[in-house]
Image (cartoon, rainbow, N blue to C red):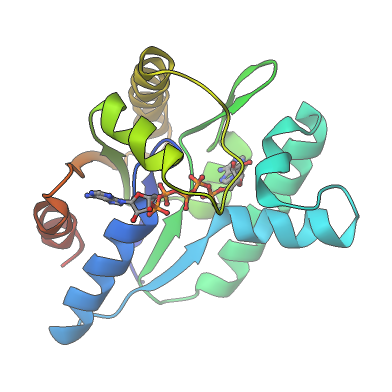
Amino acid sequence: MGKKVVVTGVPGVGKTTVINGAMERLAAEGVSYEAVNFGTFMFDVAKKENLVSNRDEMRKLGKDVQKRLQQAAASGIAAMSGDANIIVDTHSSVKTPTGFLAGLPEWVLRELMPDMVVLVETDPDQILMRRLGDASRVRDMEGSRAIAEHQEFNRAVSAAYAMYTGCTIKIVRNENFLLEQGIDDLVSVLR
Ligand code: AP5
């Protein structure tokens, strides 16, 4: 049975950047992981149903629709993961217009049963600047304080994921100018 690792963090913290760096490093050592993006699974279904035209619109959909897309993504990922080591790039919680939505509710955890949940974090000001510098996405306008609150909520909700599955929770810092250190930290728990 391969390892199942869920990597989370607020939008723009650099999850995908850290995952890609870690996978490259591990591949050079002969350790292979497959990375899947949970949001892409959701987006494929949402696009087919003409619900959204870009991935940033998904968190604005009605709660029940988001939950249905979540369920579809979780079963799709569980069906394809088999015995491989797998990294799921996703969110501990999603900020919706009506409040935080758990990214890994019971029906998602039951499908994925992760060995570990990683929280990628850094200082809220750095995240704000990264969001402002990324023109390819439609980010919500929010300040450092709101980003800090979202990171705090992600820690709290991840404790519930550990209680439900017995997974470990690992915090990886991805600071400006210290990307390699963040990658090292992730590699050390994926090896
Ligand atoms: P997704 O695509 O995962 O959204 P996201 O978090 O906004 O992803 P990004 O790729 O924008 O952020 P990232 O943290 O990966 O940062 P990146 O590496 O690109 O999800 C889309 C949607 O799907 C969600 O909004 C939600 O609706 C839905 N969804 C997903 N999972 C769900 C779930 N479980 N339940 C319900 N809905 C779900 O980096 C960002 C920038 O920072 C880049 O420019 C990069 O170069 C820069 N950067 C990175 N690291 C550093 C560093 N150390 N120093 C300086 N710059 C850095």
